[in-house]
Amino acid sequence: MVYFQVPRQRVGSEITVSLLVKKANGFILCSGRKTMRVTEGCQFSVAMRDVPEEMVFVEGNGSIPDLYVCPHEVTQWEYERYCFYGADRPSDAYGVGPNFPVYYVSFFDAIVYCNKRSMAEGFTPCYSIGGSTNPVDWGTVPTSYSTTWNNAECDNSADGYRLPTLNEWDYAWRGGLANDSHYYPGSNTKNDVA
Image (cartoon, rainbow, N blue to C red):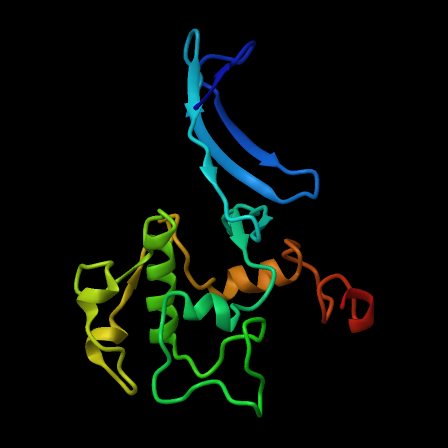
């Protein structure tokens, strides 16, 4: 826990304190943020949370929250640590191996992966089905339409892994620039940013 004394702030004003602890290479080790109203002799703490080393911090813009995103697609190795494939498995036609992206997974497979990884790493799972966040309680992943699974809910305020919303994805791939009109992040020339 880190404590702050807030000097020379007008009583009643609102302040936000954000902390990021970074390694020399820029990766974020842990972070925390708290907003509160200033009181006389105001003191408060910001709980810090470990962030998986491979995650990249994208600062929000008011309508998009602060995000931690993975700088690469989920690999087959990452996926297979928590989940099994359904009927289709990776094939040599598209690449097989620990560093290849996972494919042949559905949205349902993805939310199982997110919750299982969240639980394994001590984060609060985001997805729930039938009031439970434990994928074991959800049953077998369906291979077609499922009323129950289609009604999965996502708590975006939970700190676990989840898929980004369309707006979050668009904002993150533009490098945190909401009005960037480039075709690729920061450029219209793919070789500039590849």
